[in-house]
Each structure stands twice: as structure tokens, then as C-alpha cells.
Length: 114
Length: 117
Image (cartoon, rainbow over all chains, first blue to last red; front, side):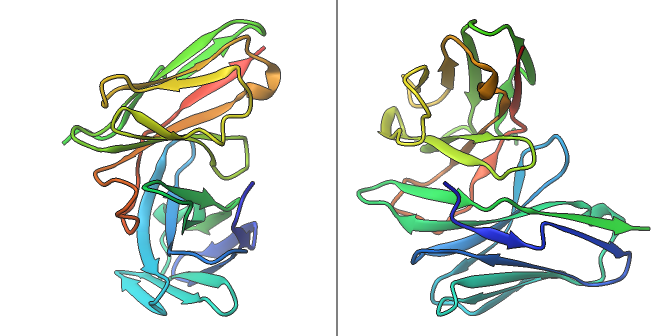
């Protein structure tokens, strides 16, 4: 079962525009991570935000977390054609003992047109 | 340095055949995960190893799925008597930390695309 739900499912923008993707989840979390996946490849970690953090920046990426609403957003500023990929949010919650699970949403397919 | 390596990259199996998918994690990584990704979906958790111990196999869809990591490094995911619904990309990921260090990202391989005909 998938914990997160990304919104929108697909997003098409022009190069230079900003792209915003949202993620909602259902249970309490330890942290939330965003990953990127190019077609036919594995996932690449972008940014991690802990449950006690509200906002985090990394280069052109800005992530927010609202634990009261159980939601997160990923903003990519000044998008480039090379940003075209699927973006997934993933939540980490304590599943007991010394293990943990990273649970992914269904993803947002971002297309940046040159 | 080398990343997570998975082989084969592509596998076509006839229904009923057994398959074995290999994952070479980053050297020294303690944690290893297997995920299944259907077309157009996010990855779904299958199983988790901490060194050689399989601590969580709750995501394995049936007893036809079996994973091992006997020496705490390379892992193999085996699917017996493959069915068409097993067609998916199987992703392996590793982390240098045990599950107790939850605030760490996973390093993913490029996956094995399994097609069952």
C-alpha cells in the first residue's frame, strides 16, 4: 500500500517557470524525502526534511512540510529541460525495532518544455 | 565510487519459469531494500535486510518470492513459477546505516525490468 499521494499526477511547464508538486500522507512520520526518477533509471535522492522541520532549501529546490495537514510540497525554481522526470515523495515512519520502511507515493511526472 | 549495481538489466521469462535477480549494494552498506515498481506507479516495499538478517519481509506478495543476503553484501531476489502479474521493475537500494538511523537517504540501483510472457 502506498502512503503518499502526489498531486498533480502530471505537470507540463515551460523552461524557466517554477514547478510545484504536492504530497499528502496518512500517518505520523519520522521524516519525508523527495526522489527523482528519470525514465528507465533508478531513483535519486533530492532532499530530506525531518518531522520537526518546516522548510528546507537545496539549490533550486525548496521543500515545505506541514505535519498538522500531513502534507509536503516540492518547488523547483527556474526549471530546465533536464528537470524532466518523475518525482516521488517518500515517508519514513517507525515500523518497530531496528528497521524502518520508506513508503513511496505514485509520483508526479514533470515535463519541462524547452 | 561505484553505485548500487543490479543484474540483469532486463529479463524476459516464460510464465512458470523461475528467475533470480541480483543486487550488489555499495560496499560497506548495512541496509539493503528490495522494491517492486509497476508501470506508472511508485515503488512498493518488498523486503529489508540489515547485514545478513532479513528483518522485514512483509511486502513479499506471495511465497513464490524469496530474498537472501547470506554474507551481508550481495543480495538475490528469487521468484519461483513466475506469473504475468510479476512483470515490473525490481529496484534494489542500500544505505550505510541500520534502520535506527532513519534520517538517511537510500541509494538506488537502476533496476531489473522483468517481463513475464
